[in-house]
Length: 227
Ligand code: ATP
Ligand code: MG
Image 1 (cartoon, rainbow, N blue to C red):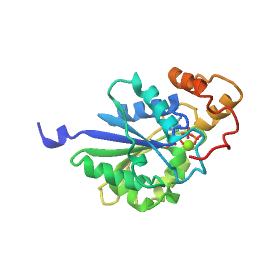
Image 2 (spheres, rainbow, N blue to C red):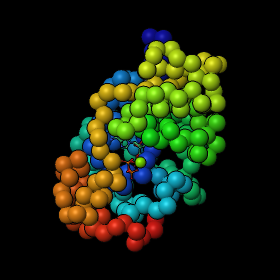
Image 3 (cartoon, protein in one colour):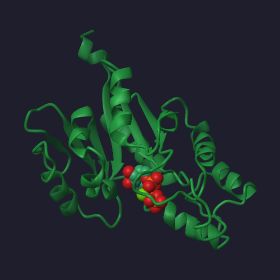
Image 4 (cartoon, rainbow, N blue to C red):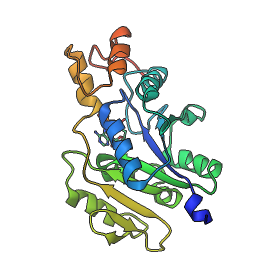
């Protein structure tokens, strides 16, 4: 077997996961299926730079991720690497760390289309696309046109390889894929609102909902705590 054929393909999925929901799981599964990933590693942000605060503590967000990933076989994994570094949790540093550890394996970073639209605000964003290939997952409310324009503005000068699916940087070193199908219209912010209204959203994995109820999470406005 050639070396390239043996190369493992690892997806990293960063986020606040406050709380993790079925939309995250569906996006990760879809990315794994289309890009033939061997593993998707969920990387919760300990101290997300773009959110004023989280509602659940890091340890609670991790506990919910553990429950959500428990029955999903060995495709999914969890990394607490961002809690082991000084705050804030910069993705570029996470990618550098994984790239170093996973030498010889192909690294992908999974983000929703909403995150792509604001990626120019991320710390050292110029470097992000040199460290991993990107998988952008569609999100309701974000059009294909917005995604295509955002890709066209990236510093690596991405050119279309396969319309509406695959772009490659001008130097050929990195790829970006856009997955338009199989995504769910779910967000943590809507779920937090529903939970505050005492609803039991189906978009939460059952054990995550039980954890939230047992720990009385998301009952108020969510403005009452810092990380
Ligand atoms: P919030 O509403 O609090 O921002 P969220 O649902 O967007 O929560 P995050 O933890 O912010 O969840 O998201 C982590 C990553 O997952 C981001 O890149 C986001 O775009 C992506 N994502 C979240 N929900 C979905 C979904 N339903 N489909 C595809 N990607 C998603
Ligand atoms: Mg979000």
